[in-house]
Image 1: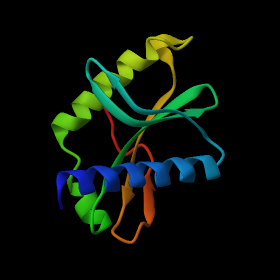
Image 2 (image 1 turned 120 degrees about the horizontal axis):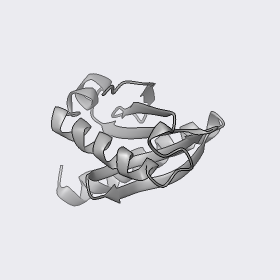
Image 3 (image 1 turned 30 degrees about the horizontal axis):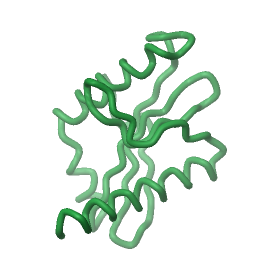
Length: 117
């Protein structure tokens, strides 16, 4: 898959996942948020807490899940820590780290609390 095609497929996957969170009653407050520590695909408000979402696309859910690396997880945690510094409760903000998988047919599987510090 060429870089441009892959980029657009990733953007489409993120948009689909954002719509799914909205359908579930959540409010997406950030997309591709970039801090010094790294990038977070989606940031979702859950009452007074936040859900940080890593979106992965692959031919199958298993292939998509295999694309989450330890290094990437560390960057997500670093960026999330930077983001919550601007929240009223700062580092005490309730946080959840989800991985949203999108397969080749566009189906979505959200793995809640898939990443843990």
